Length: 299
Image (cartoon, rainbow, N blue to C red):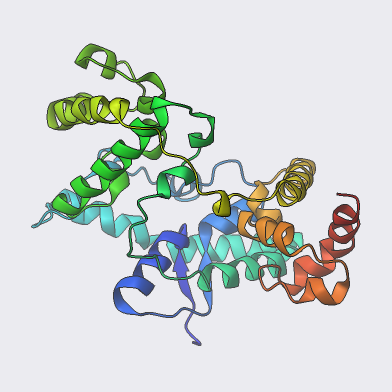
């Protein structure tokens, strides 16, 4: 626990290592979240290394098939450079956080990252409802999205890769909305590369046709969020966005999206009730607590 662990964009690494190895984390420093907290405009690792250390990473390897073995010499070198400068970058950011007075806020964010739950191994066949933009689809497009979602998961399991490595979430929704019936129509959709056409084009078109002919799925009424909760969430979302804009930072620096939903669902009315929401740490509670309570009173 006394040894600080330095990450860049720790959320995925932490949730996967908790899932695969049962690890628990304390005392971490995330250079990505630190950059966001400081309001830096360039927060990607390659940009930070270039700006602070004049190091340029080979972008060819950002989308490399890292599960293949053996790794090439160039891939090993890229992986080493991907972590080599993190401690030095941490030192630069720590000094800036101390100087600007945002260290406590950043540390609270680090603790939230360390406490993220393990990635759930189970697959929810109804998970397509949670894809961004799915709620805008109607009729046969919903049937197409459902079939594409199931096909993608089955394909990912066969290849032993994350489902988003098959096709991105946003591309699934676009395919469902456009309903392509030919290869030429499919390849015009953003996110559909020549590699995807060659590898999965036929299967995608077959899946689209299958989904188009099925009865459109209907969402379970019990899973729908009440209008009152949605109204509170939207008010909180707007408040967070305005706070972030006024400070010049990303919205998640103010409060996490998960914290907004918990606030909307539990609707705290007193400081004591607000203190019981673990998703909001003591620093942010002291900083934003009164504003949040007053905002929720009016919704």
